[in-house]
Length: 196
Image 1 (tube, rainbow, N blue to C red):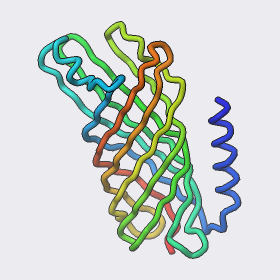
Image 2 (image 1 turned 180 degrees about the horizontal axis):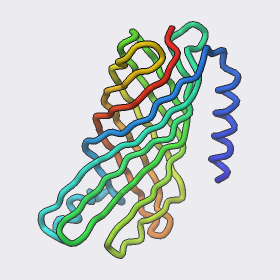
Image 3 (image 1 turned 90 degrees about the vertical axis):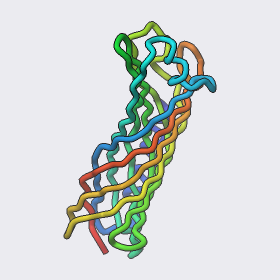
Image 4 (image 1 turned 180 degrees about the vertical axis):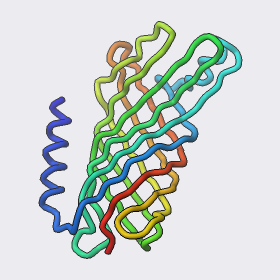
């Protein structure tokens, strides 16, 4: 909790001290592939003997808010809340691995149609399972993501269609196992931004 307060305070100071032209905001979802390892073991491989035919899906969520463009450069400074979920299931059981990111990020437009973004920050997990595993919370960790998107739309409103890579590392509370999770997804987001 102490880390969250420190990160929040620093992020607020940066956002309000920046010489910016206006509000930036985006929110959306994505779908793709996700991979989770617990202490180096791939959970997809470990679940195969449980039920045989395993299905998987990766889902990402994301919200960014901040200011920009900064100093007449097509650069935006944002606070980020995002994450990925990796769900595995068969006819009997399911495992849901969720890693979240709370942090800061930068968004850059090399040309008005292309958005490049990156984020870094504090991570935590919120896992779920129909099996009796001790893997539900974390002591905290570290996460980052990068993305590239087409920014479609006129004026201040637009739609982002892009590709995102997410990576998080956390230590689970009870088992002390290291959960390493990453995902690659295609996303769609609504964006409100002041253009240069």
